[in-house]
Picture 1 (spheres, rainbow, N blue to C red):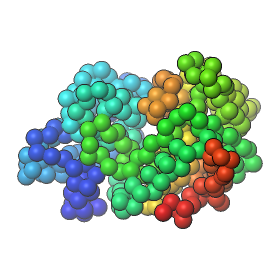
Picture 2: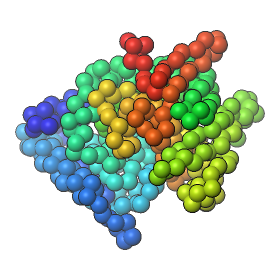
Picture 3: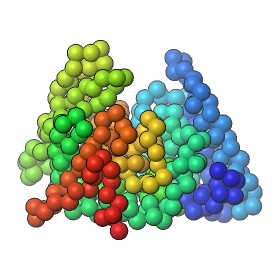
Picture 4: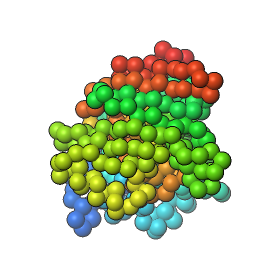
Length: 349
């Protein structure tokens, strides 16, 4: 991406203003957490973005800082409190990390009295400057808002996978949101590159169980790990069983036994960035189409706190595809949102 194109993108998406404080944030290898080439390249990319912001700031009157912190080792584990304290004092934070800090940053942005807006970019790659970053974000915004409205109008979603497995996701009593690629206002926390509508499923928390009953989320979630498929059996919005005889299946069974909150089905997401491509990088893969997450949901409007939020992508080109997603509305009518593993842009306006 040429410098002038990058500056235009920064202005369009982040809109840094005079007297604001901008922070470029990265995590670094720590103890047993080993470095890798993509991580090194990401830190180099972060420096390039810092330098571009610095040049803009020198002209426009905003300041720019660069901060490193020790990696957490797991996506959406809490970042150090000392880092959170610094983030709270910033107006705009660009987090280009190996391990996602989205949940920690979102809580800072959404806290009452916050002055902060954030763009979380876990596992971002330089090559994305030629794919998802080049999207027409006015178009992406329109698509994302349309999906948000459709999810808000829905009471459930039926997902059929290329494996033949089926999962019903209960969408009652939750509010959908959209990630439009706009990070210009206080309180916003976006993933970037952007483009999705998403909703936390109904989890039947203790304060809503009596009125609304158990969650209707139920079925099978097939997950691909290193040439094999492990199946998560889901009931009442929780992963209750792991099916598989491999070492990975046993490892995942132990993983969920370590912390019961990890069993929560945390998100139904529908990516809508036409320039995003499937490469195996979740940050971009999830912007192509269907993704489902387990673990923490409080940062998405759900009721479950956890030490993990893990997205699994099912777009066309993924090892397992979500071939069909059908939304059901309160009046019983239905909309096919994903057909043949691809988002139906034709119904998004």
